[in-house]
Length: 258
Image (tube, rainbow, N blue to C red; front, side, top):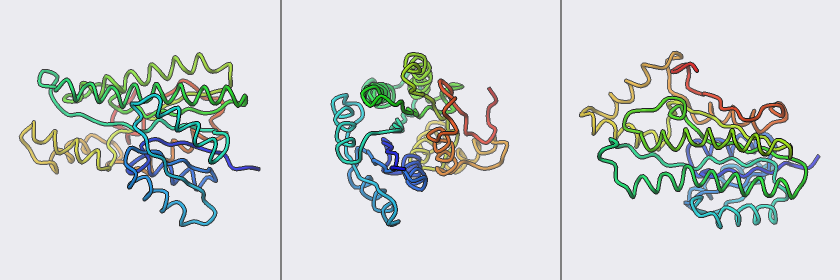
């Protein structure tokens, strides 16, 4: 059987890099897409250390619709028809709603929500052209299930991604395209370091104390690793998930129950 092809945005580090590595282990040819060329190439180099793996780096800003469509076109030219598109790229912004900077809020919505919208458009258009279905997997968040203080814009964007995914799942089911989301909780990544540092500054505490306060809410007693999230994305990208669409799966170790 020929290798399947997956595109993962925001795959230069953190959760996205873990997803790219896991799908490569599952025998996917992987398009590692990121706004940062250096980190994208680093992920590719780590994947391609295994001579049986095949990964290639791509640079784009997911907020730019034409760049997302160009990415899909180029990956098809380089690696073949795509099977999975993971809208993982995202940014966070920690601030009170009252004090939020309009430019920061606009950029967050451009990347998180519009970037996911363009990813769904581009992937679905290619899947329809190919005529044999496909899987779209979106990054939501625990903050997409329950709003978080100091994360108003982030929570709003992630709630919107869940709604967008449900609408897309209903529209695209006739084309055998599934659309699902993953909802990470507290995951140890550079993005989480930023969240804890900025939250601690606003609350007048230390980043370590802030981190511990949220870990204390986790029933399983630890924060997640990027690999914990990659496990779920690997499942959603697999044939075992062929009958699942329009869903979002919490990966939070038991912080919230919905």
